[in-house]
Image 1 (tube, protein in one colour):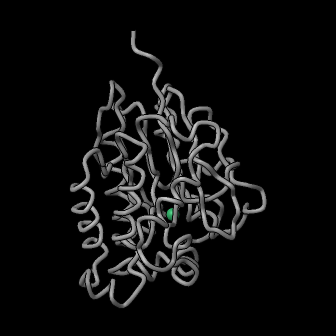
Image 2 (tube, helix red, strand yellow; image 1 turned 135 degrees about the horizontal axis):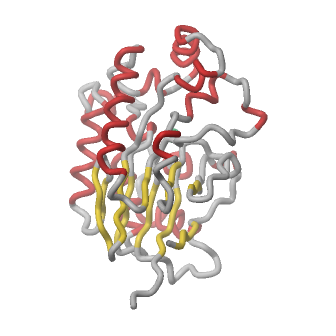
Image 3 (tube, protein in one colour; image 1 turned 90 degrees about the horizontal axis):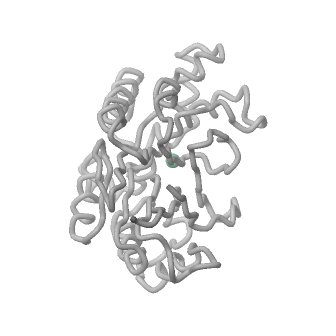
Length: 274
Ligand SMILES: [Fe+2]
């Protein structure tokens, strides 16, 4: 009989906030080593799941994946919103002002490393466990449900969120909602057959920390996944995007975000038992 399986989880690494100069493998190796659980740094699970937001630079992200490969046989990740960002003029020029080109480049880089799987409306089965995912996106449904008019939410989103300026071409309401619809279709397509679901954006805002309640900006970090959560019994759903550890009490959900250095989360890679 096979031993009970597990996988390791982290999200929101934001690598370029931690290592902001040259892309040296040794620096990134030290960063990765600092994330390993202190009680078993040399015996992690065989699978690492990264629930999005690796960093702003594909070249750094590639070194990050190679570094994690020192410890993990398989690494699965979804794209977070920051993985679409074009943060510099050179990045914009290189990607021809299209975030999709940055995504395609990252996919190309990842295929050159054995055991890396990008989940973009796709699944992979490892040792009998089916993992599936996509980055997901948000619409304004949570804000509308709180009573905020949609044009008001769009205006706040466009004036307060980096997503509105650093993902190209820039979204308007129609394209934002179209992107959400396409991501939701990807999620639906992998949902039933996946035992472990991975998205960057959280499907549930019901346990949002009270300090964020009634703040329209907070609603941009979630999508209404209630129709899927009700079908998620027995599955594990991993996500990130917000860096809080406390806003989700769903028994089968898990979040383990590192976040930015000044947030001092102290997060380490966490093992999820199946
Ligand atoms: Fe994010």
